Length: 170
Image (tube, rainbow, N blue to C red; front, top):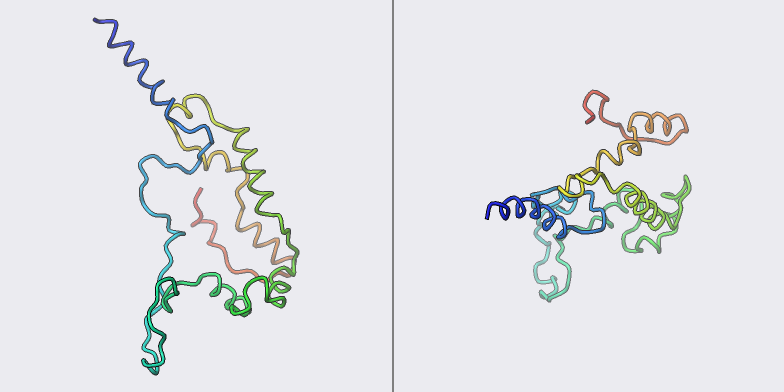
């Protein structure tokens, strides 16, 4: 009877570890159920149309005029025409790729990131207790905002400002 309790206590972490995923999930913060701030897009302001009778009747599946359109808004901000679409506006594509571009960048980065995470799965206890190591693993690969802004400015690329070095997180 006395041997069962310590055995159960020792087996419990093993049973819990068996429920974990085999893929390194670096951004799975334990207990975090809040929405991502990058997925929340504010709606456009409501406006009264000049002629309410000219509005089309409501229909399912048709976009609302107040729905956010981040891709189109970004195109307008960069000088493009949203009605042509990203692929159809050659002047826009020429402008945004004037410093070069790699059409396979997403696939390349995804493959490199997966290989990097698989080669750095974490220590045994970090995997057992599902400790998030995202910031530790990528610390050497983080972009130094100040140095990158200085590099781009020296190359003649117009840049926005970066936060002062004193305000940046460690």
